[in-house]
Image 1 (tube, rainbow over the protein chains, first blue to last red):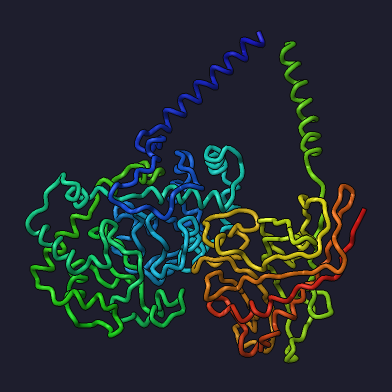
Image 2 (image 1 turned 45 degrees about the horizontal axis):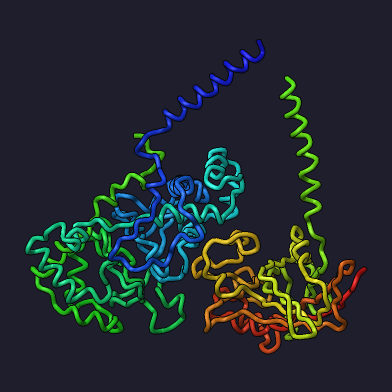
Amino acid sequence: MKSKAGFFFFLFLICTAFVSYVHDANPYFIITKKDVKLRLPKNFPTPFYTFKNNKLKPEIFLLGRELFYDEILSKDNTVSCASCHERIAAFAHIDHTLSHGIYGRIGNRNVPALQNLIWNKSFMFDGGVNHLEIQPISPITNPKEMDETLEGIVIKLKKSSKYKGLFFKAYKDSLISSERMLKSITQFVGLMISNNSRYDKYIAGKEKFTIEEEKGLQLFRSKCVSCHTEPLFTDNTFKNNGLIPDSSLNDIGRGLISGKKEDYYSYKVPSLRNIERTYPYMHDGRFKKLKDVLNYYGSKENHTTNQHPEMNKIGELSFEEKQNIILFLQTLTDKEFLTDRRFANPNFKG
Amino acid sequence: MRKIKFYKIGILAMNVLVPVFLFSQKSQTNVTIQFNHFVGEKLLTLDDSIYYNSLNQTFTISKFNYYIGQLKFNRNDGSSYFIDNYYLISEDEEKQSSKSIPLTTIPEGEYISLEFIIGVDSARNCSGAQSSALDPINAMFWTWNTGYIFMKLEGKSKFSPAPGTILEYHIGGYKQVENCIKKVKIPFNQSVKIGKNNSAQIQLKVDVAEILKNPTTIDFSEIPVVNNPLNATVIAANYADIFQLIEIKNEK
């Protein structure tokens, strides 16, 4: 009798486990080994971050995705990474000039897109952060952003049965640490690779450009490419692009990190991939539209005298030239990346 | 039924055997380095004691944390034993044990001096997320300008013009121009003898007063706060000589 009861209990367990598995198994959110395979684009240089000490694994990526979309990372549990890094905007903050934080606080700089991060040598507009795994600590602890401490987060995570489970699945033991948290987020954001735009297909000979796009590319290559170097569309350096500093922000850019006078008001050259979606533009988000950016670069007005000499090569741009450059820049929009299900919010069940 | 019982006995046996096994594997401490924090000739007490700097300015100390690492035990013949590890030492009620480093791996032999660095080497400043002593959770880390804070000395002085009359010295920086990593060498007054049945205690004095003078006297009214690697080197030059040997105790 006893063994029969045991058998039915066992059967019951299996059934409930199966039902809950099927229930959770929305294929849109499932991450398989295939999904976390690092596929380096052939024409890209060697990445700076290689996952060598942070081996890609579906369960770790999944943990990173949960953390990225969870407000638990902020002091009052109201702001997540995704609050300012939206998928539709290549993980920039669409239509917001400066970063936002808890209690409606406003930060000092425009939110950068998250893409091709493993090819970044340093992070932030001033390059103050030297490693991808360390980067999340910056917005997490910034009082104007999430205003939390690593200690505070680890305490919260340890209290959460959901995270206890996710950490165990990812790391095969119950230790919840800042190192594991940071490395999980790194797997999630590190796999955000954009290399399937129309431009990429054009380069691979799979698609053709219109005459205007073609002209735009030629103009781009003669005037912009020395800083926005293909195929990443950044040369990973810091340049002063001549913008008159916003006196309300008191931001000296790279100068804050290097302490060198010549680096004052220099900012990291951002990638132009998915630029159509990452408006507004510039380190302080002062320009709403691409045409505003082109109007600025294509004229001599409102530039400071200590702008980088490369800037002088651009010269005056005609209306048509600006139009063509913009049409070319729009070919950098990577719809596959922008709609990649791996990066979608797993808690969005709408 | 019989099988179940057998299984239970198995678990019971494991419960007894595993700890016994683990315990027997654990090697014994053979060298302990003890860090004794002083301000001049007085033992450091946080918050309550009033100290004087060499300009006769009064101050109190509320926090004193620092990294040391890359321990090297030197032998008479020029060879040495190296430990590639870091320790965060903290004068904090709850972290008193951090002031004592128990070492279990020192090979048998006679040692004549100890070397280590104050700070964290540049490779580890550029290696991403780490654990234990180097876990950024310890708040010895600059988030806006990546790098470990090698030493935190905080307190108050009525001479400080900073808000709340605070003193706050956060010292660090691994890049060439702002290097705050300092090498320390402690020659022993008698050799440390490590054998099968010999262990040793090394008692060090760490003088906080030295952080505020020699070569540069820190005037609280002029430099109440340092929290940037770009201007930390002055204090790093001061902290290079805060360690002194008190005594060696060879034990049997």
